[in-house]
Structures are given as C-alpha cells and as structure tokens.
Image (cartoon, rainbow, N blue to C red; front, side, top):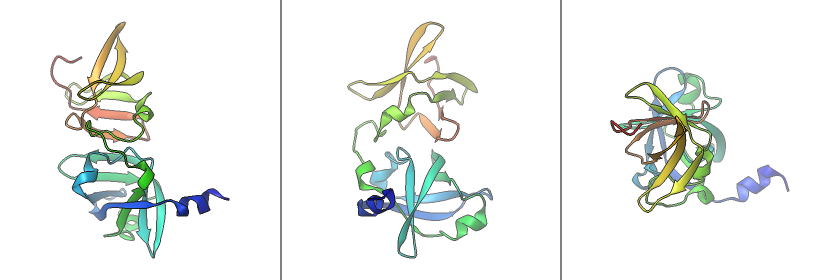
Length: 176
C-alpha cells in the first residue's frame, strides 16, 4: 500500500480556517479553534481542504501572538494563497495530543533548535534535550559550561521557525 493511500485512511481533525493573506510573500492569518491554539505547530504538515480533497502542506514557520500567522511551503505569494481563502485547515487526528504545557506532540523535534531571546537579540544556545518537570517542559542548553533550563511555555514562545530551526522567545530578565 502506498503512503498516499495510507494517508487518506487516516482521520483528520478540522482545527480552523485560512482567513486571509498577511503581506505579499504567502503568509496567512488563520482562525483556529480555541482548544487547538496551544497545540498548533507541533505538526510537520497541515492539510487544506479544497475541492473535497485535503492537500498537505509543510509548515515552514508560524507565529502565535495576537494573530496566528503561518507560512506554508509552496505558497510563495498572496495570489497562491488566495486560492485557499476561507478553506478549512486540518491536521491528522493522530498528531493531536493534549498536555498542560501547551506544547504538545513530539516535543523531541525541538532538540537541535536554536533559542533566540528577542529582547536581547541574542542566540541563547542550542537545545540539547527536553525534560518534563511537574509544571512544564524545559529545554536544556549548555552556556559557558553551565546547564541552563529554559521553560517551554506558550506565554514565552513568540514563534517557531521550522525551516531555520529557531525558537524566538520573550525570556524573563536574568534567566540567561
């Protein structure tokens, strides 16, 4: 059985819609159902429903703030994006996992990502591993031969860029 056939035997979950273009380089503003906002972006792919089919797109980057902005591979300008205006956005149901930290799915995918402190415009370091603590997941980095724990909490994460493997964070003063 091919991957294509297996994919369409999977169950999908509708998580929101493509609202409109954000700029002219193919970025989109999304509407996401509230219970999926904290888990969004842990998937490698999203599926846009068009003409009755769910078309897979690889997530290049996304930003969760006042608005939710996403950049998908293969959509490089607002004309490409307009084809999907108000289309349903889906993920594989198997990719949705609940957790208290707000970072769900395969958190180990963040190992190797760079943490960028946007306040200091500083590359804090590379995530060596992710550990689960009672309150939340923590990214472990080494800086000046000292192990530093960075909380992976949605209130601190401004954006995750899958293509450059960077996590842009608003870190509290004195953490690093």
